[in-house]
Amino acid sequence: MIDAVIILSFILAGVGIGFYSVDLLPDTALQQVTNLEGLSLVISAFGAIIGFAIGLVTQTGYRRIERQIREMPVDMLISRSLGLVLGLLVANLMLAPLFLLPIPPDFAFIKPLTAVLASVMFAFSGVNLADTHGRTLLRLINPQSVESMLVAEGTLKPATTKVLDTSCIIDGRIEDLLSTSFLEGQLLVPQFVLLELQQVADSSNDQKRVRGRRGLDILNRIQANYPERIVIHPADYDDVTTVDAKLVRLAQEISGTLLTNDYNLNKVASLQKVEVLNINDLAQAMRPNYLPGDYIDIKILKRGKEPEQGVGYLNDGTMVVVEEGSEYVGDELTVVVTGALQTSAGRMIFARPEASVIA
Image (cartoon, rainbow, N blue to C red):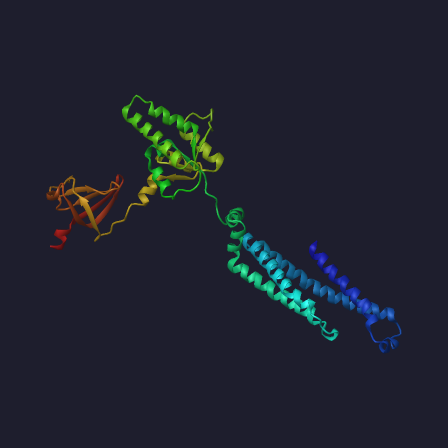
């Protein structure tokens, strides 16, 4: 519809200019014309053709500009608009003294010409400046504006809410992750997880009771140190019996991420298209990779299966088998990595004492 309006407007403008342009012809030319109405119609027709051509060009340019605006990021569109407005404002402020100057009638055209040139120049400069420092300008106006717009348009994704399960809380490493600021988003602890923690803490089994109380203590410390990050959610589902199924359902309803150490819960949630963060997987990925020739300082704790082997452990629990290390049991020494083996139980590193390698 807008295309037809643009073209029709230029056609009507061409017809009007052509029809009334006859009056601008010199009197000598008009005296030689026998049919002024016919001449007006002919010139109007030419005006309509020219207007149609200009209208097509304008309509094509309009559509191109519209497409560019649609594809332009929101923050760039706003910053360029602000730059354009500021440029025009500066141009008008600078031109104000010019219009107060007395200018001879013969040079009256200087004022509008200067106004047009200055407006174009400052508007172009404002847009270029906005491209360079636009986000800084928006940040001065509203510190959260850029991030909010980027989230709204989908360029940035907001941090999802993390739903904690019982194993993750009892494990305790969630507290270390929060202290390092690597974990983003809100932490949500469902009421049924708290109930399960309480049941574990009240268990008659000593080990379970210690683990449950440890989980409650960790949760209390997190709530004390990060009160704005953690939320106790009252959600519960009477038609769901197991805690794991409730966790998956809650994560689905709020489009959250499930934070757990439970391997089976991880698999079940993944099958139901729930995003899962497994702290064990993170710890496994963060283990340092030792290549043959790397040096490790380790304490030999016991003898290995072979008579000359000694066994030590890294901080992450990785077993290090040291050839010719049986005589160093109880001692700390520097060993050189000779190889590594990944098994179903974990990773195993093989090494030799540095002294034997040098010899």
